[in-house]
Length: 294
Image 1 (cartoon, rainbow, N blue to C red):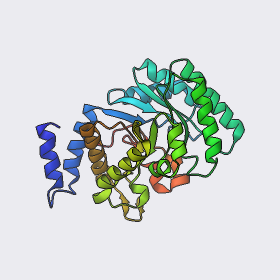
Image 2 (image 1 turned 90 degrees about the vertical axis):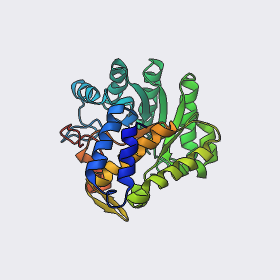
Image 3 (image 1 turned 180 degrees about the vertical axis):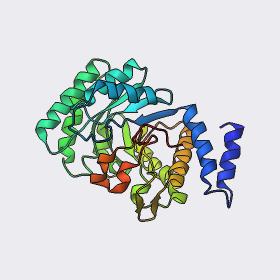
Image 4 (image 1 turned 120 degrees about the vertical axis):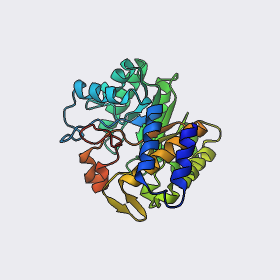
């Protein structure tokens, strides 16, 4: 941490200054300019939603925006245009954590798994994620998920393979943790109703639970973030000040402790309000017009 950042952190922690947006705005900009480990790639432009046609042009444009600030991106699917992202990211010198989106649709699952394997065999996948929160959504059983994980591991033995879900799923499911080469944990104090003043400590506790479940395997935080607008969830309040505070705390901690963290998310996406309510549209560091928020 630079002396300037130490001063800023002491200022924002001080009574009466802690909630000042300007201090976090400055610190957030400095941390962003230093570079992040990773960020979740937001694919859809305003007016688009999953299933709509995706152009190579929009992927390239967004990768160019992100390239100066991140070493890695994370993707969520290997179909419907998402399969274009990893090759273009590699072309831009960005590493990839590539996900296959799994659900209760077995036919689509087959397409996703085949797409992930094909991308990995072509050298476009640095880490493979077989599914995202499919157990949390109760769309597959653990046994069904393990079958998919083992199939992918057999096909791409040179690529680390894991599964993405809430941190506690790996504590509750030791067989799942054992099957994964790497533990890919989502950590969201916001969605657990945590007040922003306690969110940093809460996130660290989430991470430590995942570390304990990993039993020596690498743990990567595959999603964490805070919305900049959209209301409250229990004690969690979405606001620009809280958004900046959470981002600065998360990034500074990850840098200091050498933790691999993918921030959620890169760009605001309006289509997400259908599942998450108003806050779903405001998780990006950049807004829907691709303008940085700070």
